[in-house]
Length: 419
Image (cartoon, helix red, strand yellow):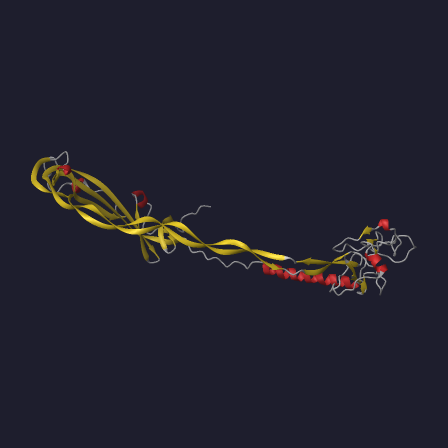
């Protein structure tokens, strides 16, 4: 059975501590309202049990009710507000938990008539609110300044290009002259071309080596052979329980009745036994596959290398062969040209059936002076070569410290710029 203990509350007007039986402050007479919560004794076990019949009647009457006109707390047994005289039916049950907004209360007025609500307010409350607002504003400014990021450091961009002056232009045109002429070659029948003539046999010659069987020899080796065996092992098997007695532990739990009193009950745990399974070691046997090493022998073939011969031939055939190179070269002051016909003419007359053909190759090159350092680039065509003139200034693209290629000309002071 639950026992009853008395709670207390603190008057917000004069800070007097009042017992739960009192609904008005014993010092200043201010009635208790929803802003003044019920407080539990710090040690509920040491709190005395309520035994007085009148106090027990109040404790068992249920939660207090709050006057709907003046906000004062009233006992459930009271059918009319002791402060303003309002009927209990116009009030509401005092909510459990957090305090609601206090009803305003006024003193005076005729008995039985509800008084105009008046809210408790003191100068101390207003001063505290102003200080808290000022402190919050200062902390907000300091926190906002700490959260703002530092200004980023200045970014230094390396130039993506360099300025160079064309210091030299060279060109080279090469005529590779090939001559169709009779050449001599040797080989086996599979090497001889279809247009060969003057074929001559050179007799038998070494063609290749071939591996042929010579004999068998015995090779010794080992092999892993499986067999069945029996082994013993142990495993854990459940064989009962181990139990221990658990002492009973009781503690008193008090809950507010929301009327100035609290109900305390003993809540117990434990008692009885706590058991856990017991495991025992059991010896068992099982069949397992094992392996043993056994010697083995086998016959393996052994080969020997023998040379093979075939008939070798010599023959003649018409083939293109490089004869000579004829080239012309110069700078931008000279017009690029190919070697003339007289320069391409054979130094000696061609034999019967011989003729020549020419394959052409052209090379172009430009040099730049970049702050006293020479940088050269090979050009792919005459049209690209003709873009450059000695003394012109060009932007040269860079990849880090390495100059990659010319990009565009640098406008001179006399050259008009696009608007």
